[in-house]
Image (cartoon, rainbow, N blue to C red; front, side, top):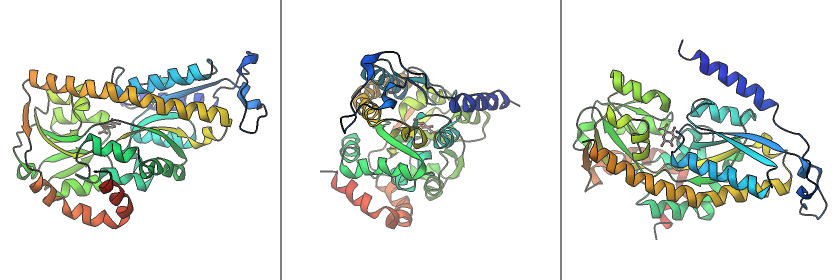
Length: 345
Ligand code: BDP
């Protein structure tokens, strides 16, 4: 019952998506030279796109999306408009990815967690404890191998334009958890992916995959005993109000990705592709600054709210428990894991 207004909005957005844009742009000064020096017809087109994000308005990814849109608008002299739809207005993450594949939604900011179900190479980020720190993660993301992973999305009818920061993920529960042993028997919500199912099983819990938007009410009603996420999501989705215990194990660092539909990308001129690619890359620094601020603010907020925060001084028992997960997937990701290792410095 509750879902029908959402379904209707999906259908509407799909229909609107199909009729994207395409009015001729008046300004003569808008023409840009293509790489072979000729003037391209498509440079005269005005485009209006949608970008979907499942976080609220002031969340760092949405702020990054808006910066990206602003830069695209500036660089194209107002000819290319990207309208940001936050709050999961265009659907949950999985359905957004499917709509991007079809070209019904043109852009999205999504997590590498669900993306991995569409493009296997990105599954490497779901493997536990592979990064030591944010610095280690970003050394890798900015490396040739990291950029190659973004390109691998092309096999899934999308292009990855840039990574955004999403920090580290931790477990939080309605009942206190002091160590890894205490997770045993807990029903933990995970992002929908096989690696996550294996990860929770290895830790002795029961994995319950479900869309992000359903986590709050499932915690509240006791359908699940816990979930896992970074501090900004824990706070902005109000999970901290119902799962008042958090253990800072930092098991995953799942970067976010700004994706564009390949169906749309292929219609753009080279000059427009360049504008969009550059704008996405330039928006990263701003997104990361906002990320750092919100991580700090979120920490302060949970302290103030009296959340029971448990630090993990020694990760060894956690790493030992999940070794079977690394072993199971090692051969699928051997070369990337090697590159990640080298990015440690
Ligand atoms: C958040 C990601 C969001 C995911 C969510 C999740 O930013 O894209 O939908 O986790 O756990 O950190 O599903």
